[in-house]
Amino acid sequence: MSAALETRGLTFEFGEFRAVDGVDLSIEAGARHALIGPNGAGKTTLVDLLTGMRAPTRGSVLLGGEDVTRVSAQQRVRRGLARTFQINSLFPRLSVLESIVAAVQERTGSAWRWWQPLAASRAEMEEAAAIAERLGLRAELGVQSQALAYGKQRLLEVALALAARPRVLLLDEPAAGIPQAESAELFEVIGRLPVEVSILFIEHDMDLVFRFARRITVLAAGRVVTQGEPAEIAANPTVRELYLGNAEPAHG
Image (tube, rainbow, N blue to C red):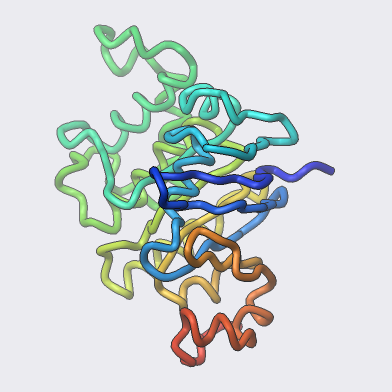
């Protein structure tokens, strides 16, 4: 079976600087895969390459076994690859329900019916409500995005990504800026997403990484240092010196 998402020798250069250097990465179907590393390791640049936001200098990206290296970011979304960002980009004056409906309509091609009353989009409304329910946003359906607590805003961003019905979901620091108690709740909700959605996430909080990830890739200076299951990564002396600071992560 082919990987849900894969890179082969992926490289990206800014002039003389190699931000991503020959990365081979394989995300299995149903994965809960963390990408970690110190600041400047190339993590976000790698995700930019995966999603088509940047074009690689060399190497290839495969989505479900299909080479999408030269496929646009928008087309990758349509083929099942969705992403959230470090800083959320929501529709501030739309309600939670309206925001998710708009994302569903973008996928279905009915977004051009913007002039019709929301009630005319019953199928989209039902799907949007179901997505909100899955992410614990049912009570906030009528609340404007800008009025949500920040943790709920991050969940809404995940909801918008899920509206694209992705096979692979990339989360770029989903817990950034969220208080620790809320970030744990956020990851618990994400952890309950269906196994049909493979997840690759960047996260700096090692407790969250070791609680949620089933596999971890460590990146430094644009290169893969090591990959493995959480117990292997926690015991790796190079990783502990490079990134974990010899602290014992809480995992189980």
